Image 1 (cartoon, helix red, strand yellow):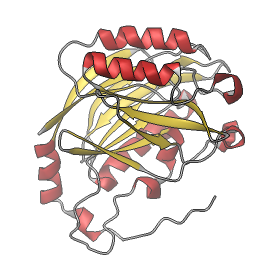
Image 2 (cartoon, rainbow, N blue to C red):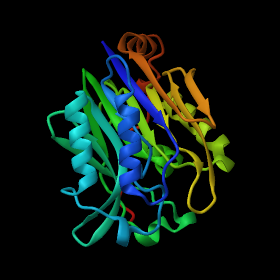
Image 3 (cartoon, rainbow, N blue to C red):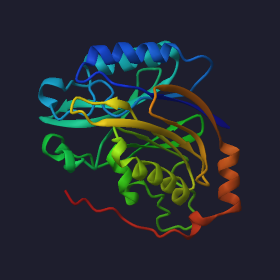
Image 4 (tube, helix red, strand yellow):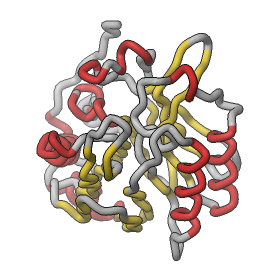
Length: 267
């Protein structure tokens, strides 16, 4: 069984939600052929802003409604993160929007303290593993990539338990100056978890003059790079094959030897 993914690597209009929705709408409309999931970057409606007060929306706001409209119109799952206000807190929230208007959410757990994200946004506490077309998909946001325990397949108490997920998607605003870490960690997550990995990053300067080189990637369960694009905008559709994944896991059943563990809340 295959899964068709479209990666949207793009520049973003700084803190201009309407302009970003319009721009991304054009890119989504330009996709030719069938796709199951369209992935856009972290904070796709604003860029990586530390100004949540004027920019945040609710789950009933225009950007989530736009995601519903796009998913329904194009019969796709649309995913990316945006600034959400809920229960008196701000979240860097990834939304997994289905064509029927139902959705799942993942609040970024690891906030990028180096840029002050921990001062403005509350941390998430739960992973989101979604299902589509017979695939299980673990969804993460940018800085989460540096913390392998949060992504780790967990066999629990039963070693023969199959892996928790088949594909890891990470949406990001990852600066070019640390691109070596981005590319290396994406490959590491694929190898250690014996899964496909899709990383979607933005390109161009943000409102703080920080340059982003993209380097969006698709990596197979052996760590081989199937797609990589640096420094320019690109919309790429790629097919992932379940048979390849199952072949790797059967031939190299390393996942059976993994350590079981429990994640404890520490904030």
